[in-house]
Length: 323
Ligand code: F6P
Image 1 (cartoon, rainbow, N blue to C red):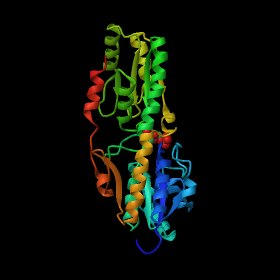
Image 2: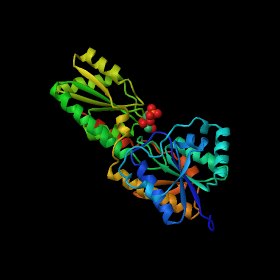
Image 3: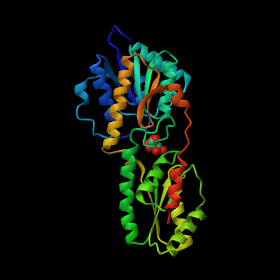
Image 4: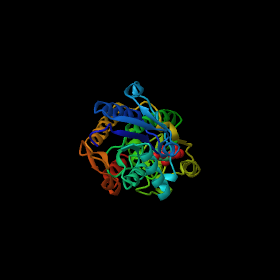
């Protein structure tokens, strides 16, 4: 990729995450610095199939570093999960003369990128999801903002829960992973954190509430991960069994929007810069990750195959502090 102007496709895919716009800005500006032209692909792989591709110039990414969502829009594209779809997407990229593509998203989006690489497209993946459920990296863009947003909501719920001496059951996102729930539980001061990694039966939760009330606690806060679910039924069971007023709140998509925190903007900026620089150096089919306190480029295949378990120590802490 040396003597002609390199043309770089850029897309956001899967669930949006605060900080995606900061990545877009960093990729576009770094690419421009190295004399490459970025083309924004709208609505993820879906937009690619529809040919919704437009040049993205540095001035078009002005004033977006602090904006939630993604100016490119995003989608979960079923067609990209099929071999025919992947071949079609690669052919469209060839027609569009895009030499490389930067894919910003989660595991599913990375798999789409890997499929494109098998057809000779140079790809770079940047991890972005509020779930932190990508085993290749210790940080995914959007996580910190989601933790802060959800924890702030939990603290507000705590106020009213304590005024009314109630039990609050708050459900946070995270798909099949308990990272978001663990962080929100620890930073919101929850008594119990229910996560898919450590299944816990309802009776044990109720027993814990009973024992905490006996110790003098006048309100309770339980954080439930989406992957466990059933927060409404749990609140009803607590009310019926213990005679304590209980309310369930499902935080939902409010956790995915909003101004990205400085931490998210920082990771987004460095990762976006590294992705564009890697393309300029011809170092493609990589993922930008954060490991041991440093950003790094690793092979995309290694990123997809990585297996890192949930940190059990954090869960231990939720148990120790559950009094
Ligand atoms: O992956 C991010 C996430 O917000 C998950 O926590 C959640 O399970 C899912 O996306 C919700 O997806 P959708 O917005 O498509 O309903």
